[in-house]
Image 1: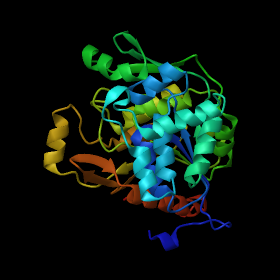
Image 2: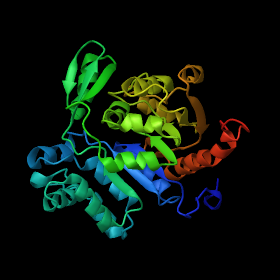
Image 3: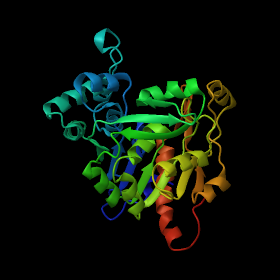
Image 4: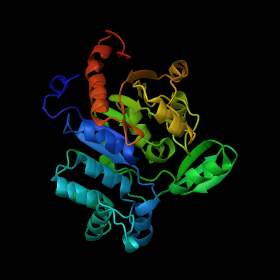
Amino acid sequence: MSETTLYRGPSGKGPKIAAIGGGTGLSTMLRGLKRHTNNLTAIVTVADDGGGSGVLRQELGMLPPGDVRNCLEALANVEPLMGELLHYRFTEGSLRGQSFGNLFLAALNGISGGNFNEAVSRMSQVLAITGRVIPVTNANVQLEAELENGARVLGESKIFYCKKREDCRVRRVRLLPECPPAVESALEAIREADMILLGPGSLYTSIIPNLLVEGVAETIAESSALKIYIGNVMTQEGETEGYTNSDHIRAVFEHSLPGLFHLCLVNSATIPADITARYAQEGAEPLRFDKNACAELGVELVSRPVSMVRDGYVRHDPELLAAALLELHAQRSVRIAGLGRYRTE
């Protein structure tokens, strides 16, 4: 579907979209969506405790800025030099590995009196972003995982290593403290949305943590918006090895509410054999479509060619993914009118 035929709504600014997740998957999708709508809200997890975000969290007592910063960069409308500056990572000294964007947000957090939500709002103004970025909670939360063998690990960044060591699946994750309060503007964005998107991103560390925040899953369930789960292109080493689409969906439902969404967008583009072979060395593979198992969960799979290969890695293509999502939104009126199902391919 071309940009000229995309639904824009009565305001001419496009449909209201609430995109929920974290990591690079969410920011990649936002880069494409911002070309089609101004009514875009990213609701972002704040459970990260590794890398530069973890350092700032420990030393300054602030919420982890990394995932939020990625989304702000994706939605920014600034000169290329400013974009390079935000993305720059120091290579030497005590700041080695730290991004300037993280430090910028940390400084804004300081002058905002430690109000992280206010810091994000101020950075949004500086970057003249399209839409909004909202942390899902202002609570200082940690993520704990329980594996199928009973082993437990505290800390988002430690789950990968623990799962690899124990060599079994994740049974459940939870936030500590449990059921932290949601940022009210995040819930409002979900209530007002025409389309609610979950993913793409790491199942247990980017998507599910948002649904463990008080009121988020319930508000999604109560919404009459089109709700779409965006399936990952590949399984993820240290998190979802061997998972199918229905495994991902079942995990989301078990951590939130059954039937939270009824539509899942998956990739149908062919992945080169040399790329899949390299991923196989890490125990990762293209996500398998088990359509019947998904249907038993009440979820319809819709496939579109939405992936690309860049620098030897498979990623969602921002523009192809955005076009597919907006196409599904445009088809919704046909489905509601009882004229048929979504075009599945």
